Structures are given as structure tokens and as C-alpha cells.
Amino acid sequence: MIFVTVGGGPFYGFNRLVEAVDRIAPGLEEEVIIQKGCSTYKPMHARCYDYLPYRTFIDYYKSARLVIGHAGAGTTLLSRLFNKPFIVVPRSGRLNEIFDEHQMQMGEKLSGIEGIRVVYDIAGLESAIRESLDTVYPKKFPRSKGIEAMDVLIKDFMKNV
Amino acid sequence: MKIGMISSEGGHLIEALNVIDAFRGHSVFSITYDVPHIKDFEDKRIERSYFVGMGKTRFRLFFRLLLGSFKFILVFASEKPDILFSTGSEIAIPAFYIGKYLFGAKLVFIETIAKFYEPSNTGKWIYPIADLFIVPWESLLRAYGGKAKHVGDLI
Image (cartoon, rainbow over all chains, first blue to last red; front, side):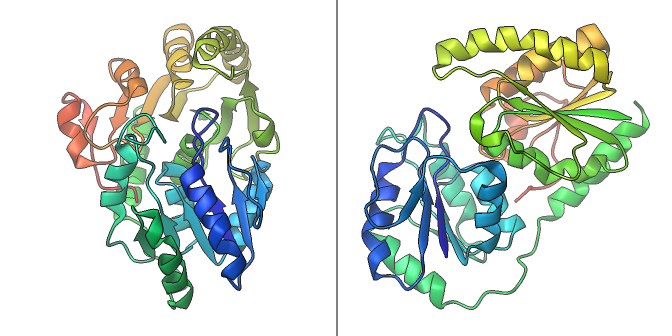
């Protein structure tokens, strides 16, 4: 199963990604499930939800073979946490898909990390999906050492509270 | 110790859960926005979850947060948190000011990983009153003052 999630809260949809995935879905062997948030495009091929309940959302994440999403903090972290190959399509502020270009900057930060493919031009999405599904990834991606260091920093802080 | 985890319901919640293990061994409660798809929120590291109202437009959000402030007071009065912890977003602003000045809680804030060069709006409000302020990217150190700490990337 390929799980697609675009986040964006109550203000921003992401039709560019939802529409592209829906167009590609019939030609894929894998089932495609989309959480479209407040995107207005109505998928015709893929199974689609506006917002899934939290636990269902997490379950879909865990059972996905591949995750496709916007360059949001939560989407990115969950992909690493659950060791999912991740295709990230940054939202563009210029196209009014979000309020500024921070997702483009996130795209730059994520490019080159094992298991992550950054797609800026939506025309490249289908080949990115096929490459991802054809790649054999390790069971676990390495977690950042920064998390351990921050753990120590917070514990030291708590000693003085 | 008693820890209050404050976050909006989407990516910021996941960011908070990404680092919540730093508080293991302590009692953690959470406060997030009250939206339908988060009602079934469950995480074995969180003992109790509270929800505050949220408007659909930004204008209403401001007033709902103001109203939500009464809920913060009620929750903090019963939970008596020693530390409040947040990764954003704006829900942390009233919660942190109330927690610090009415209940004497210490404040831990971690700036969102979605900001690279400029402070988030929430970060600007929280920085002056935070007791521990962590930035996830080195490039953010310049955006804040000497109090900000960076110990490594969080992705």
C-alpha cells in the first residue's frame, strides 16, 4: 500500500499532489490511500479521506510500503520513525500552496538522505514512485544523533528544576 | 515530576512525540487542539490528554485561544505541572505565559524543524520567557539570542 498524506491544517490544500497521485494510481500494482486534508480535488481512482482518526492514520503509516507527502515536519518525522521510504513533494509558496517557501528549504535539507526522494516537478512523481518501489531499503534508517544529545540536555535541565 | 506537553494537533504533535522520551520516568499529560480526528489520540507515554477549542479561521482562532486560556488555568490547577514542554504552534503562547506566571512552571521549547533561518511566530513570543530554548538547526542560532541552544539536527 502507498500512503499519501498532505497535512496542511485547515487552511491549505495540495491539489497538485493529490491530482497527480490519483492519475498515476490506476497504473500501479500497489493500492493507494490518500489523506487529502482540505484539498478540493476529488480523487476518482485512489481511496481518499479528508482526515483520518489519529490511530487509523498511524496504522496506515505503519503498514505502508511507501509514503508520499508534502515537506511537513510531522510527515517527515513519521517516515523516519517508521522506517518508510518517503517521496517528498514540497509545497510552493509561489503557487499559494503554503504561506512561504519553508517547504522548499525542507526539501533541500532532506535531499541526499537515504530513503528520501525529493520531487519538485510533479511530472517526475511517477518515475520516483517506480524507482522507490524497485529499491531494496534497509529495515531501519539511522536516527539522528541530535535526538540523543537533546535527551541529555533536557535531563540535565530537569536536575535543576 | 509533572510534565505538560502542549502542541497543536498536526505535525507539531508528532515533533513533540519525537523527543518526548527525554521525559520518561515522569508523569506527562498533553493539551492539544480539539479537532475531530485527534479525539482518539493515544500514546503510551502520555497519561492524560486534554483538548481546547479551535476556530476554522485565523480570526476565530485568536478568540478561541483566549477562551481556551480558561481551560489551561483549570487543567494546570488540577495537574500542577513542574515543566511545560512544546514544539509549537501558537497554542503554546497562552499556555506558557499562564503556566509560568500563574503556576510557576519551568518552560522548555523546541523550535519546529520546519523553520531554518527565521524564528517562528510562536518562537518569537516564547523565547523571552523560556527556561530552556532549543533550536533544531544551527542556522537558527543567529536568528535568536544567546539563550538558544543547538545540540544537533533532529531528523
